[in-house]
Length: 249
Ligand SMILES: Nc1ncnc2c1ncn2[C@@H]1O[C@H](COP(=O)(O)OP(=O)(O)O)[C@@H](O)[C@H]1O
Ligand SMILES: [Mg+2]
Image (tube, rainbow, N blue to C red; front, side):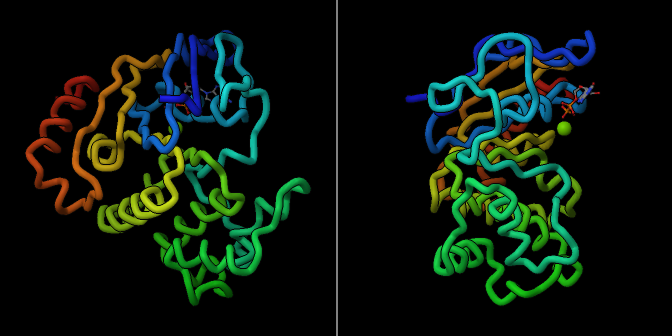
């Protein structure tokens, strides 16, 4: 496995308070990896470190072999709360990141139509955020991260605040996008079931100061569908195993 993202002994302190300690992991091309851990253990911080959004004191984080020192257009970030601008329509919201970055290449009309279709938003290009459902707004937020054609998609609990049904639907959309484009995905979540459903591997973090205590490979058949995969006894076994690791079983 050639590592796209490689962490070795990464550590982070905020004002003398230790948040992350000795975090090491390798994430390969096209892998779907979830980071699972209790609230406050440093998951969001870790993802921001990988994205080059937050500096850190200890260890190394490398992206395609080079030390991460600043954000890269090859990594798209989906934040915990979506950053849609209410006065912009779907098309302009999708292009927001591209338009704000002078170095970014604007997708042509065909590429944009393709993205809109991938997101299931065809026909809503001229709609404004208040005219969309919660699930659609989340899909626009994912689209913002995809618009620049990144190699890696970093997602911080993107479906946290949604009802179970919408969450299932978006998980399926995400799997569909991932299966189609084969991007490397790093998803932060505190949902054990979501991590098992989506991932090739689940990295389990300890309480703060966060470190990776377990690296669990999820050998469930793909393509996955939430309602079918959840019926698989192996799915239940993974959930139980991860619950024990998380101390919630
Ligand atoms: N910018 C910051 N300044 C100071 N402390 C921070 C900052 N960001 C996060 N923290 C602290 O780091 C710890 C981990 O936060 P976070 O990474 O958001 O955890 P998680 O995403 O796992 O819930 C928390 O104690 C939080 O208060
Ligand atoms: Mg967080």
